[in-house]
Amino acid sequence: MLSMTLVVGAILLLMLGVLSSFSKSSEQPQRTLEPYFRSDRREFESVLGLREVCRSVLNTNSLRFVAANAPAEVVSSYGTEQQRLARLSLQVASAALVQRLAHDSGFLGSSRTLQSPLSKLKGALLLGVCTIGRAGLAVLRGLSSGIPQWLQILVSAKILTNVGNLLIDTERDEKPTSKALSEERILCSAPTDVSQEESSLDAVREDILRALRVSLPNDLSRLIFLAILRDNNSGHYYHPEVARRFSGEVADRAMLVCHRRIYEQVVALAIEDLTDQLDVYIATVPVPRGRLIESWTKLKAYRATIPMDTDPISAEIFFMKVDVAVAILEARLPGKI
Image (cartoon, rainbow, N blue to C red; front, side):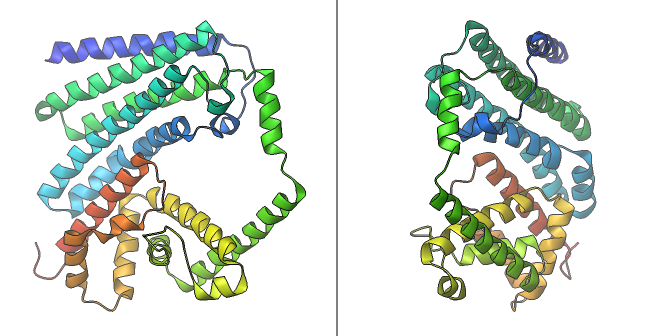
């Protein structure tokens, strides 16, 4: 089994080197990635997912905090969830690459740009790297009993970091066609009334965020509050004061944007910071602490606090972190060991 791990690692490093040479061989200047992801968010979300899993999940600081504060079964479960999220992020990246190759278009999905043979080769190699990375994680999982958990985290993070960097470097070298650039200019040139509407929406959003910062102690409390304002049947938000001051449509859109922004900030929290924020939130709720923790453990109502159209990777990161934070606070209850 050890020799198989070495073989998989060698193949992965070889493909990483080959694809890196393709990226470095281009002499085009680097450009921001946002225009490429404007029409098709799946590839963008897969890159962000890889980065977020590496940054906030696959790190030894979080592991040390969980090991020092959570029961043994939670520590073991946390290690399993770390590896599952690593595999999920590569699976999502692979699915995005397959879709891209199948539709024969770059990250400007709706523009239907024709890929060059070299671009197609890069996409195929990236897909191969993702596949081999997933195989490497599978082998690592099979050997987990003989490998320290911190070493598993480091190896998994290295695989995901390399794949994510290659996704970014490769797309920086993709040059959109003149037709695609023309279409992008048309999409970006909005009429004056639309600009005024967006400006009004920005003002409403800033008012809402300012009020939330004043009235609630942290981002987790704000996330839960905004989720309560949403009708889960229609997905629309309603607050009587905001609706009175602005139109219902503007208020709804503004609260959705605020919900997404605060959610992203909560997902990016380290587990220790999320645990502290949950502790503060519980202190503000007029319910016995043990009863609330029991409810969160059994009902898991916090799964309904995420915004609509949330990407699957960030949702899984959020659920895992909250599960661990609840378990840690439960272990701190009087009478618990």
